[in-house]
Length: 315
Image 1: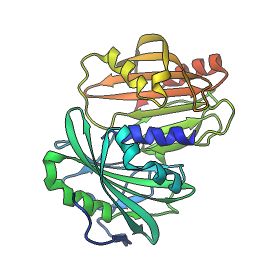
Image 2: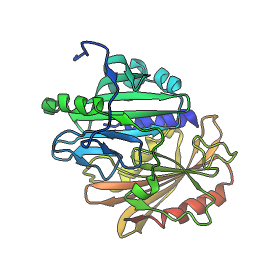
Image 3: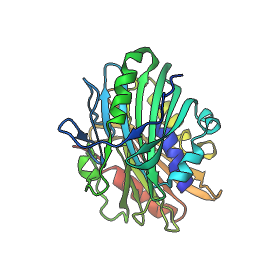
Image 4: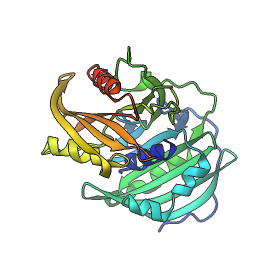
């Protein structure tokens, strides 16, 4: 499941200047610092950036630029091993630069990369720090055509503060909610505005059923012509998506939004049969997505995933 979480991170990253000297980030909190809801990170956002509603961070909608914060239950050393030019290339990203820096006295790395999304070439700065218990990633993204934003986004990343003892409330900060009553699912973590639930409350999940359920929103505006085909294609972008076989697709409506539910079968990281459930709901130029996975008790979790998804509501 650790590998799967790291793979999810790469999916969520869907969106040569070099540094003259080694950077050391060690800031004191000021009145200009803003804590990002659901995280322990505060920063001074670039001018004209607003709080994002679909993810943890800030955005400038008119340019499609954003700064996204993710806190992951993955060891720092493991994640760095996966952040290689070769691995990023398999996910459509070109690594331009990598530099080891210091963040609040601890080792950190900042990457610069490029990636195309929906026909637009984006530049991405990724600041990574943490320890063997977890990792924090700060992602500054902007279209290459908006090169004037580069310095302001870098400055915002370098203004960051991480407050280890801060109490966060990712469920309260999320722009949506679900009812878990009778599902045996427990909140496990939040990644970039996506809420993760598992049968034992741990991420990665430790229970034998490997039951996992996530709820999130698209992190950028999208124009979708064929919605049914989109949900089928989105299913294939899940970890091990090339092995998923669709059993049925159903047109639905939840919280006044049209969408599709897919029941399918796939394989987990050990090659064992896995239940795959996906619901996507469309509104304006965005969508909400719910994904459920389970390695056994298939009938039980198929019903529970469906029941939980039907309780989805926007706040």
